[in-house]
Image 1 (cartoon, rainbow, N blue to C red):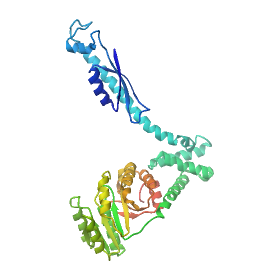
Image 2 (cartoon, rainbow, N blue to C red):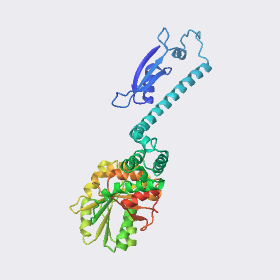
Image 3 (tube, helix red, strand yellow):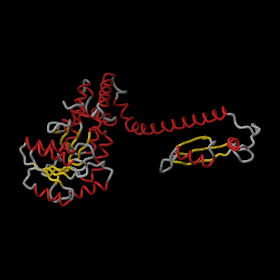
Image 4 (cartoon, rainbow, N blue to C red):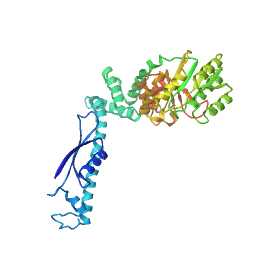
Amino acid sequence: MQVKRYEAASIREAMTKIKKDLGSDAILLSTKRLRESPTPLLEIIAAREIDEKGFSAFEGYKKGGDSPSSNKQSLPASDVIHQLRGEIDELKTLIREMNKQRCFHREFVEWKESMNVFFDVIGLQGEQGANEIWSSIYYTLLGRGLSRQWASKMIESIKNNSPSSNIENHEEGLRTIQRMIEKSFAPFFSDEKKRRVKVLVGPTGVGKTTTLAKLAARYALEKKWKVGLVTTDTFRIAATDQLKVYADIIGIPMEIASEKEGFQRSLRKFGDRDVILVDTPGNSGHNDNFLRKMKDLMATDIPVQTDLLLSLASGSENILDAAERFGIFDFDHIILTKFDECVRFGNACEAINRIGKPVLYVTTGQNVPQDIEDVTPGKLAEWVMENNLH
């Protein structure tokens, strides 16, 4: 038997090497992930049977060579099928084990962070009545979309800083959690900046143009402000036409700026306006060069307020990723969109808390101008616990 060791980044890569080196009749003896490797690698041990002439037994049959047991007869079809089925089953087992390892690793990292506090939180110690309350609160928070870590830490904080007797029932515990969430957001809102020029940025499809129209209508029709619109979105088909329709309906002027000089000229033209709203082209956020060019286009000596739009329907990971990518603009506030498409607000709200910026508005539909609401720390906490706007 010829036995060889291989290192590869994936099973597919390993099988290519093994087939080229040992032939298609080679078998896998073992596989494991190399922990000491700086990059993810698999160690695969493979082997093949060889006869006294240096050929593998199966290769001999394929080439018509002698075989001790076949007397130059080909291997029976049933034996070939049986051998192939065995190898396929072995590969299936190997793949299942690898998938289990990946899932286990991901779960283990999360479990490790919260397990110590988890046992205390759900009340495996202390009186049974209090245990049931904490356990009920904990699972309610998970149902609202909060992570195990955030839910555990808040409950642990309550238990450490106030006597358990203060929490008499499930509802009182949830009200206490709601106050804690509100308090966690309060410091961000103290940094709100109000400037005349407001630029909306964000990923493609987040709803910048519709949100800008809602704000324009609010300022012009409700507050009676003189509003000017500027769009730099000349990339998307009919984007300027869409905003022009809104501008005409509301009765406010609009300028198109596809380059830096045009943007500066538009701002000067709207020098008498109470507020200037700027629409920008959407981008996935992964094109850093595009974002840098967009930032350079809007560079001006006039103080600018930059608001990042984030879709609540995109999930917490996408929200955090967008905030990191668009951090190049050093945005001042967040506007949350598509609340009506959000399944569990707690998950997204936790991501917003990690970003650490004040939230100005949340949009709740496509209707202009009504589907937009102001946001306060208290409203954010209420929406987490109620999972709706009312």
